[in-house]
Amino acid sequence: MSEQTGLSAGYMTWYRFSRNPAAVIGGLIVISVLLMAAIAPWITPFPEHVGAVVDFRNRHTAPNAVNWFGTDKAGRDIFSRTIFGFRVSLLLVIGVLGVSVPVGAVLGMISGYFGGWWERIITGLTNVMLAMPPLVMALAIGNILQPNLINAMIAITLLWWTWHARLVYRVTRSIATEDFIEAARLAGAGPFHILFREILPNCISVISVKTTLDAAFVILFGATLSFLGFGVKPPTPDLGSMVADGRQFLPEKWWEVLAPGFAIFYATLGFNLLGDGLRDMFDVEA
Image (cartoon, rainbow, N blue to C red; front, side, top):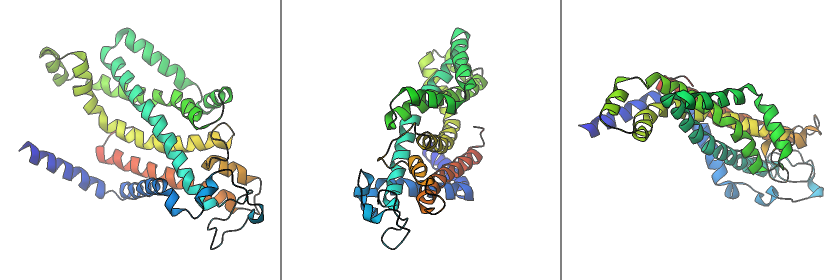
């Protein structure tokens, strides 16, 4: 019976998802971005152009049958570099959210469940971090550290855990006094069991929605840092730095900005649509 109930619940979840056009479109976009990043070496015509390759004979070539998105100031194929740019953006998302989500969730549950000085310290630190403009703080950190992918992850991660800590804290506070929590406590369950077996499952839906929406913001935030010169440095094919390199040749060489700019828009649109669809499906606030 429990297996049938699980299957029916899973089917209903999938049914609600499939009936949401925004979620389906967003999911397809995200899947396409993941696939392009995964098989980039096999679908790009010039995979060697992701490095410090220079071909001055083909500098600033307009889009054509060979170079679909044209070439940049070094004669490198923009289509190949754009597809590989998805890899850099997704690595940034994995690195940032892979650390900030667990850290923020655990700190949020601890402060919401135990209260007292745990709550005062964690929420106080969270409020201080949230009071600082994220871009200004990331620029300050990026100015101290050497600009590269790892340091960009560190700069963004130091900011991002706070959002998840505050969200999970709010959810934990709302369910900490529920009957099932009290029943588990009276049954002899320890704090570890209550936090990770009782409270955490009730936070999964809001964490999933928040994480999906945050993926879009991390891609955009990382591109902004690279655009300003504090993120990933050339010749690594980062979408933000590609836009920065191409803007000096506008409007004549418009394709050097259009391709990476559209790639940023495409990826962020997919994660935003998917996140909005998940939020409607789970009927939660994130």
